[in-house]
Length: 80
Figure 1 (cartoon, helix red, strand yellow):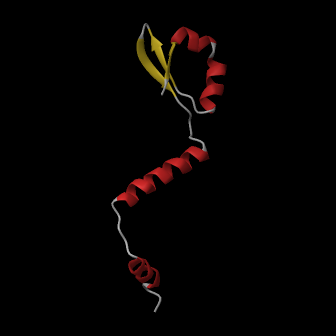
Figure 2 (cartoon, rainbow, N blue to C red):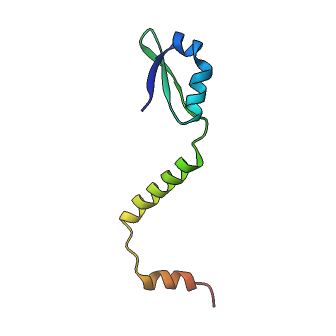
């Protein structure tokens, strides 16, 4: 979850904020208590990408029921 930070504070602590963002934190910058921008990592870490991919595969697998015979048939398909 992103933390709120006032624009004036973000301007004075930008370097430290960027260090924290690089480690995965997110911030929402506010001006006069109105959200105006989101500071997020440019790229997720490879660990986070792997975890997300695993989670998506598990979701996909929930509705998929395949027998061992079907897997073997798919594996051997086109090998003749």
